[in-house]
Image 1 (cartoon, helix red, strand yellow):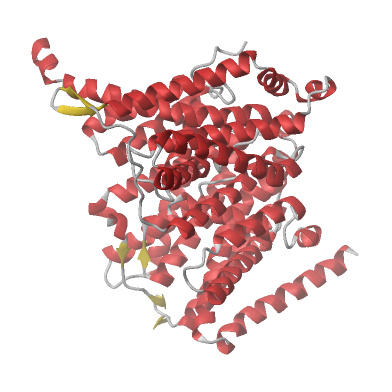
Image 2: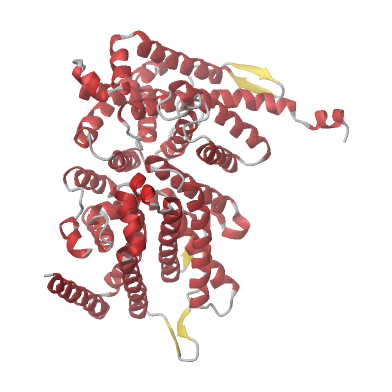
Length: 297
Length: 319
């Protein structure tokens, strides 16, 4: 086959559309995964309940939006409520497990996820709810009317992650968090209230998950199982990006979302998920410390 | 001393076994099936105890072995007419063993949390494949098939009733328990426990740790597949829901509730979980979200009773 024929056979328009789609979902995923990686980095806890916090955020968004009609207020309240809930969960279930085998924390957060998921099913029923987009403008992209809102989500996620990064880099409590991540015992000796830093980090991670839930709500229906798919993807992202590595997680989130988006051109979206599974397995086999971290010396 | 506790162990074992043999004769139909189901889920949980309790690896992917055992049995029961119990067993075990080999090869290179996540991801891969490959697996609806007869070629052949089903399951579970108990007390089992206690040291002594782990995952997957075959034969259907990772999660819950590293603990845990579920849904109705109170019990047990219900008897059971 000639080169031009090959070039013509590639669906460039679809690839461009899927690139944008991939970046949008990638930013959402990065927002979820950075909360997860923060929690893992600081206290070696793999938070199985992260997807449920995402889902609860979306539900609270639905409720606040229904009562006030203001999307941004819904975003703010959902973030705060879930952050408080996250703090409560950390104090009740994870604090007693501090110093035990890290594997027990997986079990505990798995228990939390079961409780939250079934609570949502019980409280809100199995029918998916919808969050109305705050604005409905479109622009033309080949044969599609592409909604502006999707690009706004990507921008907002990037802004939240950027703000979080600045906070970690320069804020007083951000420095506390980084110090605790590096050396828990030393941080304690320097007078940092380590248990409360853990609680705060968990709350921040939970709040970020909730924010992404509200932002993502308009694109898909909100239902009680939405957390499951996302927590799996976020796990993959966190492992591929290198556990506890913020920049790596963001890169991995976009990388994996792009791969899945391209795969979805040729196979059904349900099967496109397998692509990210394969990326994960290859990463674990060849670079178990993560794709986007410098090779450990 | 050792001799006497050994005797008391076997006496207790015989009493429990005798009670389980008599049970279907006195229990009403519903509870008879319920008890059989506890035994099947118990076998699944017991198989994963080999990894959690004895090797120190938490598998979040046991649903894959269980589900593939189900689908293997389904293939045999649908392909051959009349359906044959032993072919179903053979197919289910081969399917789960192959899957277990595949999963074990990749996942045992990783430890702790990474092992848990990898097994979880593998089970989700099989879930997606089974769910989307509708022509072969029936997709979301799963497969229905006839129940085989309980037969030994040349000796006898009877259709399964709920009593014979129970005895058959009981026989398989008891045999599996005795085999697994023997395995955990063998030199091989000792190496597994040594990996749990101190992996670098085990490697330093000269044991090929990776190979031991692969065999442990395969052994565990094989018995999980056996549980899948039993479940398929009892319920006459296979569905992708059983490959979904919530089943793996429940398996881990059974283990933690009953007491890891005891083999019988997981069966007790399965019984406790299923009885609580039944009790709650009778008390508050079918729609009651029973996993909320059970989840609370689970978390409380992790914090305050990490040894599980049978933890106090662990040394005695492993003597």
